[in-house]
Structure formats: C-alpha cells, structure tokens
Image 1 (tube, rainbow, N blue to C red):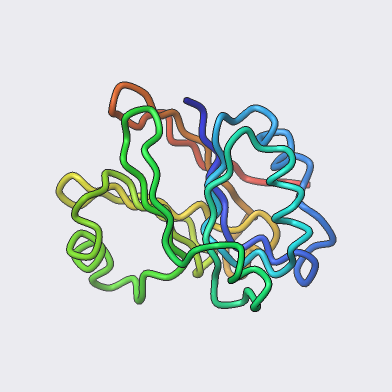
Image 2 (cartoon, rainbow, N blue to C red; image 1 turned 180 degrees about the vertical axis):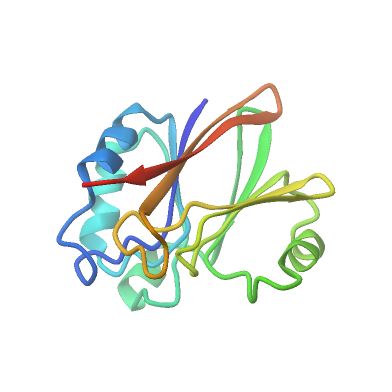
Length: 164
C-alpha cells in the first residue's frame, strides 16, 4: 500500500495551492495521511476528491468548519500497520517517550505542527513528521513523505524535497 504523508499545508496563507509534486503523489497513493493545519476547506475538498483514501485531522490553525469535518486524532490500519495521525505532540524534548505512552496501540504516529521533518523510533513506535510542502520555515526545503505499508511493516519511508 503506497502512502503519502503531509502536514501543515496552510493553503491559501502560505501558498496559493498544493505543489504539483504533492498532487502527483496524491494520484499515485493508495492512502493520503494529512496531519492538520489545512487552513481552508478547499484543500480538504481537493484531497478528498483526488485521494483513494484520505485520513486527516485538524490542526491549531484550522477553524470551526474544518474542525466539524475532521477529528483531532485519526486511527487506521493500512497494509497491516496501525497508524495514528495527530497534529501536535508537544516539545521535541521527550517526544518519543510521551508519544509511546499516549499511543501504545499504534505502530506509526504521523504528526505535524513544527514543519520540521522527523523520523525516529522508540520501542515499536515510529514517529514521522513529513514537514510542510508549502512553508519551509527554518528548514532548507519544503517537504512531504511517501512510504509503503504491507504485511504489517512500513518501509521505503522517503522524505521528498520540493525544489520548485
């Protein structure tokens, strides 16, 4: 199962639309996981219409209309891998231990908020932050991730840099 992981799209405040590389990845993915801060419903509608399966949550910059349509935490099993998606996980210091206690039933936690790509493992929990495809903040590139989930394992986790 091919996965696209993204967060912090901030359309239209940080970009007019999603980058072409992200839309191409949506078209190739079996499931899209979005860890919040959409900012507008139009981006949710675009991804919902193009995605085979969309799993998303709201973030701290998402207003009432998005909060009505999206949960704070989403859970799904994809390719035999148990995922949770959430926007915020708190400070980087102690993140792994906090998340392992908060999400003991999942294999992979996808999160956002910081716009900083993250890929660590604590015990059996893998934590992935795909960064932002529209707002690099203090990072050298705008980013998103792809991965494959099959037979209860996640592999080929790739951080993609958006150059244009």
